[in-house]
Image 1 (tube, one colour):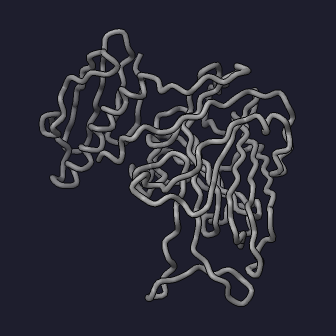
Image 2 (cartoon, helix red, strand yellow):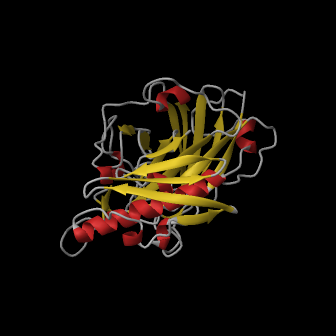
Image 3 (cartoon, helix red, strand yellow):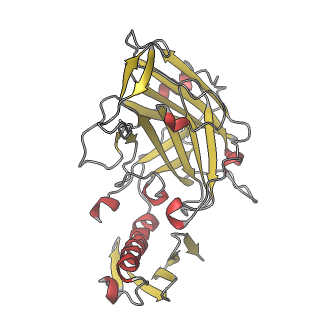
Length: 336
């Protein structure tokens, strides 16, 4: 279970008033000054080899929009999904995952291929908790562009990279009301994934390599902040996006509340494992081998578990701090 408790990465996104053209060229001075993330790694983390090709992201924001740019090193650039809401990850693609509420529910996914075709969806909760993707949802007002350093769908030559640029309206990644615009220090959860298929040239096209049984080889999944599992739909494992208006962006510092949440996730993961083995949820922390008192940042926190065979709720309380709660569907809430 240790692989689910590495600290996610963080990015402090700077504010800009400069107009940005979504053409994938990143020529504006604001883009030139924005820092790149660290290079993408395997979705499972340090236990796996580093990706073959470099991928990295940078971000900016203004009062209405989150801007995302990504460069994907690629010697063979191809894309065959040609319609909006095609299953874009059948191609090599770039994917964005956003949870503005940091509660692992009501989150958003946007995928794009080298043809700049978009697959966007909303999930009320993760698939593991029986969430069902709402593919009819679209990012209202999304603007995006792709530039290609090379030639698309030409196996005979070698390409260099493709670059994605997108502008996501802040209001578009919010279901319901009210919409609260980011303020100084606002924290969102975000992660990025790159799907990369092993291919070969055949009759002038790219085709996926197959195993001896004729099945396509599994795709590679490269990400910014490692998930620890081959599954992007663990929103609690995504990285942190922190908004600032400061001219010189401060270094990202993980809030203590996020460190406290890790103990709720320990309860959640162990409860799921317990139920899989025993057909019911544990009735006590002792059955899960979890201490009821934990120390976080020098403060004593008390864990409490309330459970039936089919449901559970765990809370974490500490003097002078908000009480945190998680349930059997992985919904995390801050109680005031």
